[in-house]
Image 1 (cartoon, rainbow, N blue to C red):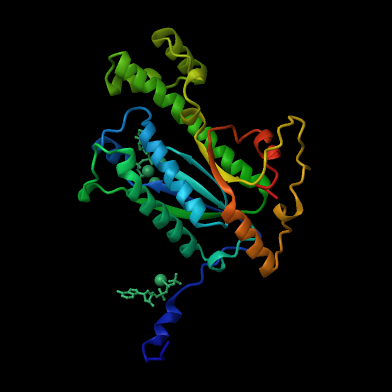
Image 2: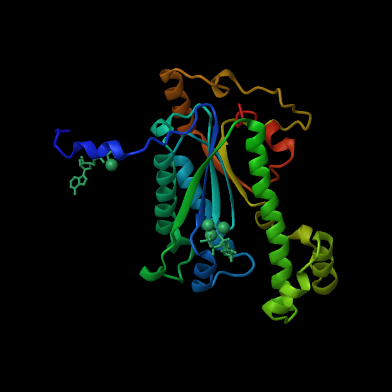
Length: 281
Ligand code: ATP
Ligand code: ATP
Ligand code: MG
Ligand code: MG
Ligand code: MG
Ligand code: MG
């Protein structure tokens, strides 16, 4: 680039490279989706089309960015996880966050009509997302982060399912339903659902209770329930933390070819991770 007397303004830019060797989670969240879900008449408590659209957009992001290991989504949010050895954009926070947010948003908007053919997007009510990057120093804390989001999914979904049963089936006003639920614990909500509406919460769809996990499927999962954390994937799929440029390129190719799957399963217990040892290796 040509030098000019204006060039010095570059010095005002601050470095924002994230720490090496840490797991990076970029969490995005729909902006004002409470209003947006009203505007486009999402079904309450859970609009399946809206969740499928979120998942379709997340799959686009995973396919576009082979550096991503796994993603977890619930409601209007999605968390995308980069491996500690990822060097994309030299780990610059703003670059990583804005690339994920805009790739996700572009895909979400592009695919909207497929999921909501009867509800064209209005220029004055376009879906947008914010995002942030957080670093976690080891796999244990990363897993605790993922567990935190899935517990949140469960707590919110149980509350919302009960709240909307009281409103839509019980004829209560929103304020009355809120009052009825204040101070209740999980077992109370399960009881309200079962005794008053004949709903067994356990039979609700897994996607609502567990959220959605998106990852690359390299090989048949280890089906044995005795799989342990020490189970190793083949060499090429269990990279050392420090990778040479050629190794990184090889990994990236492998990741690009792998199938991206969406599942609604427990990611809190060890089982999910033990059966897919390549995720945290
Ligand atoms: P903010 O901009 O602060 O994130 P928000 O209105 O998006 O505000 P959130 O806490 O992110 O608030 O909550 C998202 C809201 O969007 C939910 O509370 C719910 O009302 C609605 N929503 C999101 N996804 C769905 C869905 N699949 N079905 C029905 N409602 C949904
Ligand atoms: P990066 O992802 O690093 O930004 P890039 O390919 O987007 O890579 P930029 O430095 O941002 O590189 O340059 C954008 C390039 O896009 C320009 O060099 C030009 O080739 C092309 N481009 C952008 N806008 C136009 C336009 N209106 N007409 C023709 N070409 C354009
Ligand atoms: Mg928010
Ligand atoms: Mg939101
Ligand atoms: Mg949200
Ligand atoms: Mg550019």
